[in-house]
Length: 113
Image 1 (cartoon, one colour):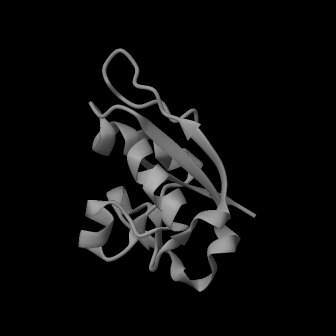
Image 2 (tube, one colour):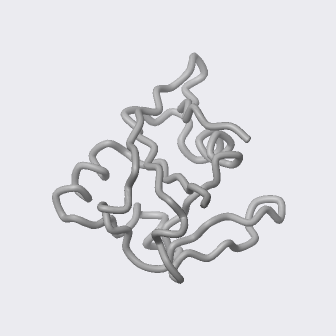
């Protein structure tokens, strides 16, 4: 089994918890799927898309729990990124960790290859 990760604001996570599902951030809804990263991709995702943002968290989800709606598709540099077509049931979230910014404002996911 492998894990996938979603970086989002604490406010988005709290709203999802209250609703029982996460429909995606604004960019997810615009693209038609929820963007995830593998452990090896998460820190670069944080650097590229979340630098300068505060109060972020990282969700950890077992990929197999997401069923056929999870697709690994080519994205940045041809890497295969996990994309979920449909909402994320918050019951599938295995862990939630803080992603505090470093001195340059880049969120630190604590994940690596």
